[in-house]
Amino acid sequence: HRDLKPANIQVTPDGKVNITHYDTSGDDLELVRGNFGGWTNQTLDATNNMGSETSLAVDTGGGLHVAYRYESGGDLRYSKNTGAGFTAAENVETANDVGKYVSLDVDTAGKAHVAHFDETTDDLRYATNTLGVWATTVVDANGTSGTYASLDALGAGLVFIGYRDDSQDDARLAVNLGTLWQLFTIDAVGGAGQYISLRHGHGHTVWMSHRETGTGETRVARISVNNTDDD
Image 1 (spheres, rainbow, N blue to C red):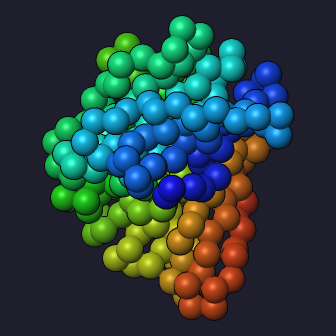
Image 2 (image 1 turned 45 degrees about the horizontal axis):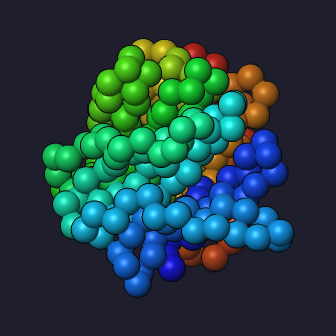
């Protein structure tokens, strides 16, 4: 088993724990579901080395959504289960070597938002199906940007992505308040930005934790975003 991280573990309203992971014995994307009363395993995608990186989210109705990497093809895929079983896999992006450091969230309307790293161009990319079809865009193309991505979405007009700029060894934040992406450097001290975890708080407040490589410390930042300003 591989790629177990907090983004792969979600609890649904029925009290079940849901874990997506990569099964190294079969090169498959799998879902483990249950609690201490019993666990079940389900293969979600068994096509040619699926799920080497994955992110799981739960919508307001308890439906499961998963974004994951197709390792052999270097593609980003998505599937969901809102009551009738998981849908056939959708190709989110197939150009370039994409889907690394994938991070998924689902907004209150049940729409998916995905951040990931394009290893071909070394860019942070974003994809969403808010309009019914997948739309993708480059968020940050400066240097090598987009590793350790962590995304939180409140809706089509409010998306936050924490990520690392490997070129500068910085922890950065991308904010979309409706139309354009705004980019902020959050921590530029001592090799910041590994293992980022991001969550929004009240209003436009964002909390972001990350590892600082110079000292090995875990650092936490609170960012207040208001239009084009941060503090």
